[in-house]
Image 1 (spheres, rainbow, N blue to C red):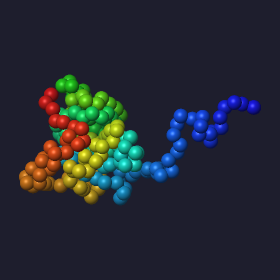
Image 2 (cartoon, rainbow, N blue to C red; image 1 turned 90 degrees about the vertical axis):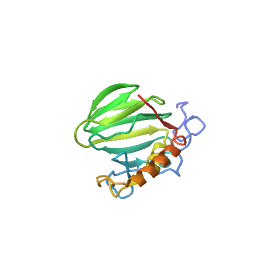
Image 3 (cartoon, rainbow, N blue to C red; image 1 turned 45 degrees about the vertical axis):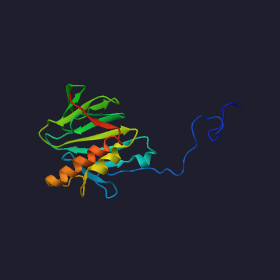
Length: 181
C-alpha cells in the first residue's frame, strides 16, 4: 500500500484540472484552415493562434524574401525564432549575428531587435511569441494572401499609406514600438 495520491485525485495536485473546452491543434502550413498574410513583403502563416492556446503563445510560419525583414523594433513579450531554411542577420541591441538554418534565436522581452534575410533566397522560420498577441497584430496589418507560397500582393502607394497609419495606431495595443539602432 502506498500513501501516494491516485492520478485522478484533484486535491493532491497543484495542476489545474483538464479543460475539455480546449481542443488539440494540428496545423498544416499549406492547409486550408490556417490564415496567410503578407507582412513586410513576406508571407506569415498563423499555425497556432493565441485563441487556441488561451493566450499563452502563438506560432507563426514565416517566409521572408531575400533582403526582407522588419525594421528595428521592440516589444514586451518573448519572441523565439527557429530558422528552417536560409540565413538571416539578426541585429540585437545594435550588434549583428548571422544565423543559419537549424539555429534558434530567443529575443528577450523589451530588447531592440530586427532581422534581415541575407541568404539571397527565401528564408523560412518559425516564430513563437509568448504570451500571444503578435498573431493578431500580423492578421490586422497584413494583406491576406491565398496560400503560404502565393506571391505577395503589390499594394498601391495609397494602400501602403493606409497600412502605415493602421500599424502606427495598433503598435501600442500590441505592446510594440519602432526604435533606432
